[in-house]
Amino acid sequence: MLLTGPVTGLRGFAGVAWRAGRGLSVLVVTTISLSAAAPVVLAVALGRVVAGLGSQRAVGWALLAAGCLLLQWLAGALQRAAAVALGERVDGLLRQELMRAVAGPEGVRRLEDAGTANLVEVGRETLRGDWARPGRLVSTVGGLATGRIVLVAAGVSLAGFHWWLGAGLLIAGVWAAYEDKVASRAEAGHHYGTTESARRMRYFNDLGTTPPAAKEIRLFGLPEYVVTRHGETWTATMRRVLHRPGRRPLLATVFLGVVVLGGITLVIHAALTHHLSAGVTATYVQMFMVALAGIQQSSWSGLQAELALATLHRYDDALKALITDRQQAGRGGRSAAGMPRREIAFRGVGFSYPGTEKQVLRGLDLVVPAGRAVAVVGANGAGKTSLVKLLCGLYEPTDGEILVDGVELKDLELWQRRLAVVFQGPVRLPMSASENVRFGRPAGSADAAAERAGAAGVIESLPQRWDTVLSAEFDGGVELSGGEWQRVALARAMYAVEHGASVLILDEPAAHLDARSEAELYRRFLDLTDGLTTIVISHRFSTVRQASTIVVLDEGRVIEQGSHDELLERDGTYAHMFRLQAARFGEPT
Image 1 (cartoon, one colour):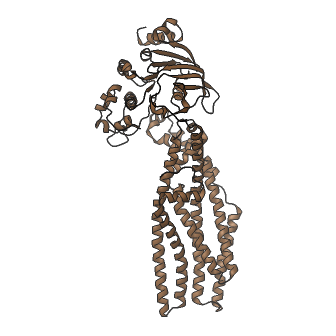
Image 2 (spheres, rainbow, N blue to C red; image 1 turned 30 degrees about the vertical axis):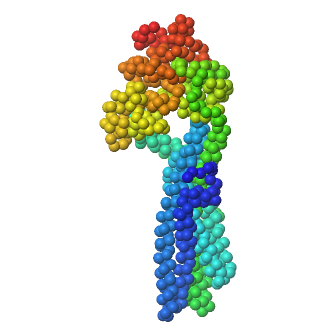
Image 3 (tube, rainbow, N blue to C red; image 1 turned 180 degrees about the horizontal axis):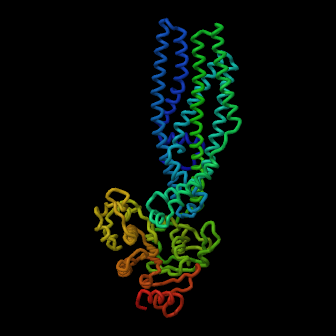
C-alpha cells in the first residue's frame, strides 16, 4: 500500500506506521508501555523487599521484582525487534512513494533543478542509511516515550516525600530534555544545510574509488588532487556542523545534578533521623536512579528522533515539489492510441533549458508526416537533441506548440508509450540481456527484435545468451562494447515497436559503431523505419541521405529542408557539409 501525499510530523508518521503494519504497531505500543512500567514497579518492589527483610512477605516482593526484570528484558527485546521490522516497512513505503513521485511527471525538468536534487537526495541516500532514516522514529519515539513515562512516574513517586522535590525533578528533566532537543534540532539542521557539500564529498569519493574514472585519474596524475578536494570539502562541512555548546545546556545539567544529589541527600538524612523506613528510603533512592536513566534514554532517543524528523521534513518538501510539478504538468484526457495518423507538427517552437536564458530553439516550424522518415542534421549545438527531448515530452516548449494530428502534445495521455527511442548514450542496465531489451514492456521473445536491429550476433556470443548479465561487476556477467550496447538499445526500440510504439527516434544511431556495423545499419535502415514515423539525428550522411526528408538546423531554426538530391542541387549548407564528409570518407556524391 502506498501513500497519497506528503507525511507531516509525528502524527503523519504514525499514520504511515499504521498502514505499514497494524499488528506491529500495536506490538510496539504495548511493549513501550511495559518497558516504561517495569522499572518503576521494580523500584517499588525492591523497596518493599528491603522493608520486609526476614519476613514471608519479602519473598513475594522479591518474586515480583524478578518478574519485573524478566518483563523488562522481554519487552525490550520484543520492542527492538518489532521496531526494526516496522521501521523497515515504513522506509520501504516512503522510498516507493518518493520513487513514484520522481518518476511520475513525464518531463525531467524538475530533476535537473539543483534545489530539487538536494531534496530528492533524501530518498537516494538518507533513506538507505541507518542513522537518520524516518523508520528509526519507531525506535526513537519508543525510547522517548519510555523515558518520559519513567520520569513522570519517578516525579510522582518522589512527590510523596516532598511535593517540591518531585516537581523539581520533573522541571530539571524537562529542561534537560528541551536543551537536548534544541541541540539535536540544530545538528539536524546543520546536516541538511550541508547536503550539497555532502553530495560533493560523495562525488570526490566515488571519483577516486570507483572504476568509471579510474583511467583518467591515474593517467592525468589526479589521485592526490581528488583526495585533497575531498578533504577540503569535508573540513568546510565540519566547520558548519561542529560548534561550541552554549551556556544553557550546561546550566540545565548542573540544575539536574543539584536536584538529584540534593534529593538523595535529603532522603538519606530523613532515613538517618528515622523519618523514613529502610524500604521507603530504598524506593526513593531508586526512583532518582530510574529518573536519570529515563532522562538519558530520552536524550539519546531525542537526538535520533530529531535527525529522523528532519529527514521526514525533507521528504515532505521533496514530495510536495514533485507532486506539484506533476499536477502542473498533468496531461489531458485525450488518448494517444493510434497516433500519429497524419503528422507531427512543430509550430513556432522556442525552448530554453531551465535556469538559462539562452534559446536553443527559436521559432522552429517543422512537419513530420506519419509513416515517413525525417532526418535532422546540423552543427553541434544547433538544437537537434533538444528537438527530440521536446517531442518525447521530457520538456515543454517555452514558446509555440507541438501538435500530434492537431492535438497539443501536452494534452495527450500515454504519448511516451507510442515512442521507441535510441538516445546517443543509451542506458546500460546491469541486468540480463533479456531485461535490457524488454525493459518496461510485456514479457515475450525478443529474438525478432534483436534480428531486426542487427543484435542477434551479440546475443549469440554471450555465455548464457539472453540470461547473461550485462555487467562485469556481477558473477558471470560480461561487458559490452559501445557498439554492442548501441545494437542492444536498437533492439529495445524494435521490441517497443512490436508492442505498440509507432514513432521511432534515433539520436546518432551510428555514434559507437565501427565501419562494418555502420554499413550494416545503412543496409537495414529502410527495413527498420518501414511504416514508422521516424526522426533520425546523425552526423553521418550515409544514413540520413536515405530519409524521405532531410531538415537542416542552425541556431535553433530550420534553414533548409528537402530530399538528399534536392538539397545537393540547392548547393547550400547541407551540400557543403555533405561534400566535406564525402571527401573525408570517400563517399559518392
